[in-house]
Length: 370
Image 1 (cartoon, rainbow, N blue to C red):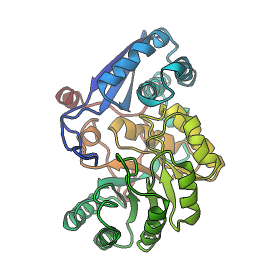
Image 2 (cartoon, one colour):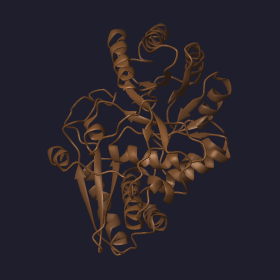
Image 3 (cartoon, rainbow, N blue to C red):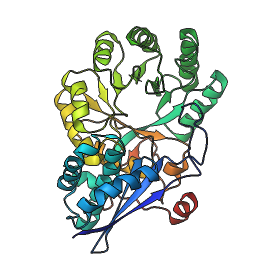
């Protein structure tokens, strides 16, 4: 089975506020779907958190090395792409495009073989995984309403991220945490994402340690992106002094970039984004290296329903896993596929059992958003 064509589909018109200044334009285009087609009529779908223009630019480089390749060998094919593109940037938009291709090839393999991707990744350790509702911080009253809405939907874990946390005062941060814990009660897990990858992040290790100690008083499951993304030494110091687990990794690409964080045990939780890090192939490698170092893989999932399905497959195939991220109220996740994802009575998501990623795109929604 040979690869014959790669098509891109941009998603716009439903872009959620991403927390950055000026990040509320619904027509901003960040997510791109990739379709990999074959000479036997089977198509695989993938997704990457990158604009269509950047993906198409990367595909100008990648297509000559991809067209005609064997469609049932995602690990070899995407590693070939990665190594062939070495001089065009070890990461960035080219790696993001490879990520979408890799996800699509795994989906294609599953469809061709009649098996779910989770089984092809090594085996299904679990058929359900707990999603945490991923929302942005807000002023206290609005934050309370947001949290109670997620609890009413059935979520048993919620992550709050970015502004205004860490941007006003330590006193205000604690006020937000008190509001949050009071709003959801003792039985709902809470996570905090400081958003240290924002432009010109102002805080260092001292702030992060002091904030982690405050968060421990509110039984926070982890503290994410408290420092700028590449500060391995800072994360190591933070982890050694934090009473709550430390997480990061959403901005990193390629397994080699993750290795210092894992080998030095600078985090408790590593968070590769399959739509950016190199796809399911790289995320699997990262996950197993993390497992060998006593670090938990929790994939970052601020992207699309295709990314959520890929995360479900990945976590199902890891020997130890607890959560995946689920950005709520976002059409690219909640309207893109049919049927849409549904929480069960325990607040869990079922790992799709159908061939490939086990999802079907909704053509009417695709037409409206592209």
